[in-house]
Image (tube, rainbow, N blue to C red):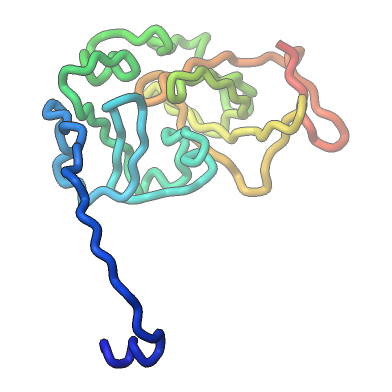
Length: 204
């Protein structure tokens, strides 16, 4: 190999430089590893020292936009598992279900009453907490499950001030609990309109 390199590249001088002692920042000994890390293939940071992980990956629209509860392949990839990697860190992001599962989250819709629960075909305004930011979405209800206090929707995509349905359906399961703590408002007919191009406008 040396002979080949000398013929191909010619003789070259090599210089060795003595590197002084490298000063490294001490590792934070309070940080914990995630059990079975090598078995997980998708991770998301929720806040400093708090992450969620799952064994299979998905890159559908909902997952790319930080809405894992509406993952189109949730039945295949499964839900995320949340880990707090530093026990001493004080976290509020997932306090309601990680620190104290019985504690009520102010963003949760709470117990759903008959008047609050939508019907199939209703348009709803959805509000969720995504990475500390409050997000708003519009959707139409396609299935309800009152026994489990959740319902399924088809999301509309925003374009400027109007909304429309995508050719590839963006579906999601809506519930008031973790991880997104959805709240919703059922819209009446006076709160939305549709034009000849099937573009929706919402009046709120």
